[in-house]
Length: 337
Image 1 (cartoon, rainbow, N blue to C red):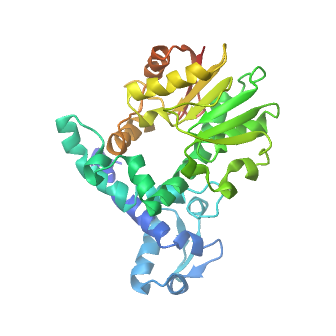
Image 2: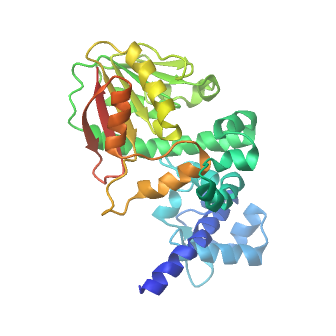
């Protein structure tokens, strides 16, 4: 591609994501399977206008999410299967959240935020911070929780790569702070049978026992769920892990959370901070884009490994090392007491 074509490709990126969103929203990826199905049948099954539905299906085919033959029959690709609600690593929730109307409306505030130096487009658009809006809006909360579950399964793989080879033999109890439904913690419990663990999360997130990973992964006898707020207190443990938590918050708020953990951890205990670590200027990286997303949705940001090390130091911890996933998309900073 020429420089001209590359720049146009960036400009038109919104088209791709919104076409994908429409397919997810309308249920296309739960209707189409590996066996070819005619566009008219798909439109009828989903109660769509045939002419416009065919054009959408054709566009989804152009994105590599569906496969079209000469008779307007469509089948799903491996990439498209990731957008079905029943796929074990589904990305459906992420698509509905990030391309849905609530988050899409935030981006128009980006220039003005940068001009006046005050981030958090969520507050500008809705008059509430993200988590306040989530808690007062059940439909949004449902989509948000589905997206976080999708994110979690992907991020667990990256964190497991970063921690592969780490010596957990001296750790007995791990607390996953802000751990959602417990996917990361339960994955660790499966891998290390000697471990016990607890998930600290808001009561609204863990009230539905049927969707918690402890039961689904067969480790509920070693995994407890604790309703609480990390800004108030955390359960006692000898190791703590936080996955994509601190990036939501300002430096002072991060120090508050880390200080609460420091007070509870046993001597010689450990904290793991798993985040998208921002590399130096010589490297293009997903974290530098995700950082702008954070500018829009919250008061936090993506940070470098050195900045996380400084937050640990401010809260009393000693930063020992930072580990990385194979792809480099996720880093895990370790602090010791």
